Structure formats: C-alpha cells, structure tokens
Image 1 (cartoon, rainbow, N blue to C red):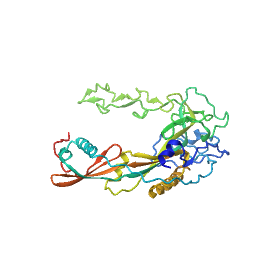
Image 2: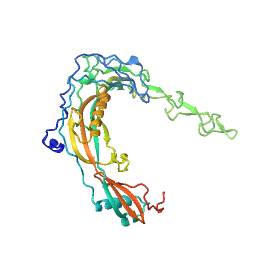
Image 3: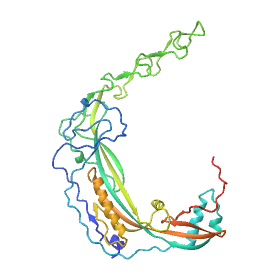
Image 4: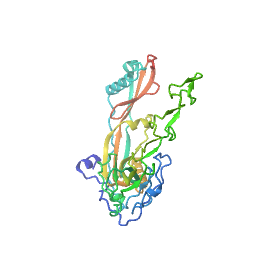
Length: 392
C-alpha cells in the first residue's frame, strides 16, 4: 500500500484524534513563568491597587505576566503502529529545455549578469539528486494573565460578585488549525474601581515642561527682561519669564492615565495566543547544493498526516526520515506540552527535485542547479558578469 493511496482513501493513521479539552478538577492557584528580561511594559501601579482574585493569585501588572501551564490532558500516551512498506520514490530529471529556461530567467533577474552563458552555453550533463524533507508542525494554544486598567467611564464593576472562571475555562474563538492568531479577553468578575495611582485621584499631573510652575525662563532674553542694554524684551514684556506652552500656563496637564476621570477600572486581561510551531529535516544529498536553498521551495508531497498527536512514520524507505520524525516528535512534546496546550499536529514528507546541470562555455566547464517545484536556480561563480549597473 503506497502512502499516496493511504492519504486519498483516508486509511492512514499515525496519531490519535483530539479527544477534546478536559477541565482541571481542582482550583489551585495558577503557576507563572518569570517575566521576560527584555520586556518593556509601562510602569506598573502599586501592588495595593490589585486584589488577589481566587485562582489568579500572583497575577502581575504591566505586561510582565507569564504563560500559564494548561490542565493535564486525560488521554493515554499514543503507541506507534507499524506502517506499510513503500518502494523508493523517484522524480524524473527535468528536461533540458526546462533547465535552459530556468537558467535564462535567473540570469535576467540579475542586472549585472551577461546572458551569453545562458544562451550560448552547451549542456553536457544533467543529474537528478532528489531529496526528502520531513516537516513537523505542532499547533499550540497558550494563555497568560495580567492586571490591566483603563479610565473609569461608568463600566460595570463585577469583582467578587462571584468567583471568576479559571484561565483555561474561559471560551475563546480559536482559528482554524495551523493559523496563528491572538485574542485578548477581559476576565469576568475581576473588574473593580480604584483611585488613579498616577494623579492620586486629582485628574491632573504636574507639567514636566515647567515643573508645575506654569511659566519658564524667557528664551529670548534668558530671564533678564532686557535686550541690548536697556531695551525691554518684547517677547516676555520685561518679565523675564513666559507662559509654558505645554500646559497653557496652568502648571498641570490632564492625567494621561485616567484621562482626567480620577478613577480607574482595574481588571485582569487574558491573552490567548495560537502558534504554529514548525521544524524541518532535510536529508543530506551529494549534489553540492547548499541545503539552505531548499527552505525557500516546495516539493512533491508524498505523505501528510494530521492528528491531535501524530505517531512517527514507520516503514519509510529512508531511515534518516524515520529517525528525524521520532526525534522531532519527542522534542515538540517536551517543548510545548508544559507551557501550552497542543491542539493538533501535522507531519508531511516532500520529495524536492534537485537537478545538477553541467554546461560548457568558452571552453570551460561550469555548473548550476535547478531545484524545487518553482525551478529556482543557484549558480555560484557565474562566468559572465558586467559593470553596467550603477548603484544610485
């Protein structure tokens, strides 16, 4: 049974279906990771502003919250199952005309390259070096909580009306599998009204431009009140000071935190983030083409399997692919299961065509590569460059 037929008729099974989410049975306080060292959030209000909500003890303010570990899934560890044997896959080498067209197009995209080798070069050999690429994608959901606030404009205050739902019990509109997204949700029953910490409930803060004085030293006469001897300064009318333009002479500005409302609505924000974590393994091939080039192209898909948790492929003809699948699946489980919830995994195997083209031009032998479904070209040490391009 070939991998392609298994995919088309739905008989491939290398994982287990997602059984759904099981809520945690206890209400222990959430654990938090330490804040990132390079986070630059706004100055946090004093801790006394925030209440210890049940289930949210330790939640911090100012963007420094950590990701919450998900509830432990109540599903058994999947066990690998033997897969069918499959004959070696091979993709025929591209035609000489395709190789020439790809080479000519690549040359035309480089303004300092002469087209002579692509037009006049004689192809002497074409050799196919097909290679496998295994890709594992793990689609995860992570959640973090942090205290936040906004100017109070009569919004509902519901703190302690009833216990707030747990971070992982709050419904969120999840995107389609493997599509990244983020959603911020105000946690119900955590909102309370507090006096603004920035202005101490005054609604205004001292002007920083004039240090609250309402005026500054005149920049024309430098505070002397006179210019050129006894000539009175016309800018400040001889006072030596001028009204501060930043605060219009009032010495204070509207508080930027509460927008002059004097009160803040303080609540807990839940940030839900969906991330597609992807890792590739490309089988080494002896063509001489740098493997980094293959990351930018696609190949012919030989196998695809999407499950809640996938099993490593078995019975594939190249053992390095089997070993890579086992290694990456183990690594993803260790990296993502503790700090996030795994929603779905997908593993694919592609066969990427690589053609090594040897050609002769002006009595010398040169090489270029055509690779991927996109017929990309790589040609180090191109033999005909010119200086017709001028960098503006």
